[in-house]
Image (cartoon, one colour):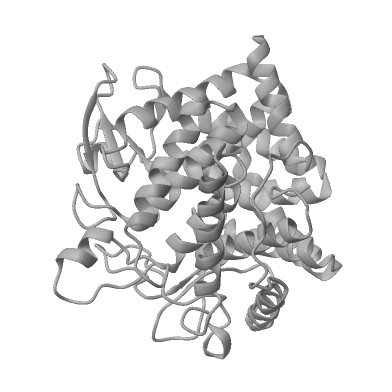
Length: 409
């Protein structure tokens, strides 16, 4: 095994266990995290009390209702609710949150042993089972994660070098081999499994996926295509398109957030400077075009070019804020670190205001997320993944304010 691979894996393990954390800029004192973590705990308690069964999985609340729509085990969003519960256990130390998280996480464990139907295995397992293993060391959780990584990697097309994100889109859309920017998030499962199981092929597959995505998924300004289409036989890049953005050449806000976060975590596990620079370019493009209140519209170009008002996407803001807190600890220039860190805090301040917190109106954490605008799904809604990344960002900032590593134990 190559020495640089071993070193990268050791570095990733040190980061995940709270050692070897890179330096981070000073913490802004004007934002007190604790009341907002307490708020999330109170809102989650309201949600738990409203469930007919404690194993149900809240997914989203439409703008005109107060009732959660539930996710099913195996759906791409099913890990975010137990992930929130694990973060609340981490933040509070209260056993009731651990018990609530375990009840739902145990239902998700079998997903790790199923044949991967799409790229979402990483989202499903890392947020729920992965956080559970990180906080409890439960062997069954580790085994499910390793099995899930072995399943996920079967989606790799050797010619293209990336995972097939949506097998159902091959015939439906004529996308011979498609890879979405969201898929960068699922590399965490492969990198983690490679480090945990000393599995060099998993590392190499994840590395190659990030490398190819870096090459073909971005426009010159640093904005990301939602979908990159490759020829399944030759692996040649064919085109960049969208599925959830406004148009093929516009910047879909949540996709840009996935790009910032995905390449930040790719750098975490590999220490490859190119991935860090890609994360920075994606972040700079996002920050340059943000509206004044730090929360993007669902598609940057739609908001700028269409005459009718466009909905915001608090989920994109939460994802990016969490990513920027980590990214700030990796960049070499102090000015860049301070800029990313400040943007993350300003975004959390905005999301924690009366404009975006649900408060008494609903039991979710946040309002004003956009799920799938072209399909008309979850418009101006409360969505579980917005809540998950909002809480993750709060917990990360809390760690920094306590002079602890941003990535937790």
